[in-house]
Image (cartoon, rainbow, N blue to C red; front, side, top):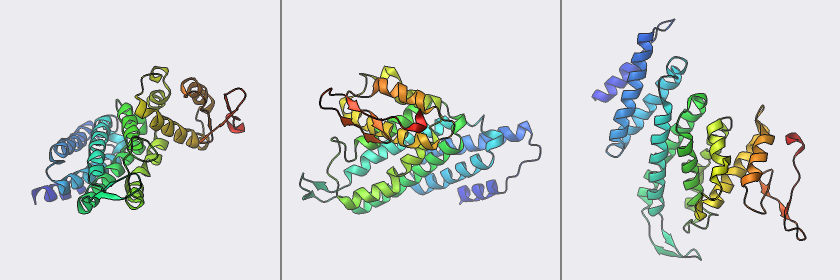
Length: 275
């Protein structure tokens, strides 16, 4: 009751015009305080966690022009990425166990799966909203977002590291969770640190074997979206990506190029929009 009364009181919060420095500090402290509480109650009270994140996102976005520089959204993004990664691993444990031919070996926990998926979907929605609204103000969280994308791609088909998942549950995971990663990637296309995380030369030889294919999937999805981004330095990203792309694989609008049998190199044609 106290928490609901407090949040209703926050809904009546109004700032003056022009806003004062004191008001900026107070709104920032309120949002940060709600985030601190949210980190504590996440594993204790899911309903309260959802209520708190709704309040944080509402007041952070509505007062973005005033508190954006002070809110340290990167901390919130890092926390959500960690929660989604942990929750996703747990979610897969709730699925029925299948053999390679799709026969059920052991029953899962359908009720627990649906509840966990709903929570993960909500957390992903908040994550996407924060990244999209505060894309120019993110700090020290791009690597964590990349790791989250790696985890999601590594643990789902067609990755060889993925467990057998029936089509019904796979479709639900895509609908409520992984489809949102496209929006997440689009929101980060102009983020220099995120692109450098994807294309940095230091990544060559540093990726684990099981992360190589998920990394390639992410890169191809980025390249699919680049032509849609006005002002994006596509040729530069393409040039850097060719330096780190696995041997014999060159992107062509999100598809793998055809291998030339004589030279054993990949034949590709650069789209006119990138020349």
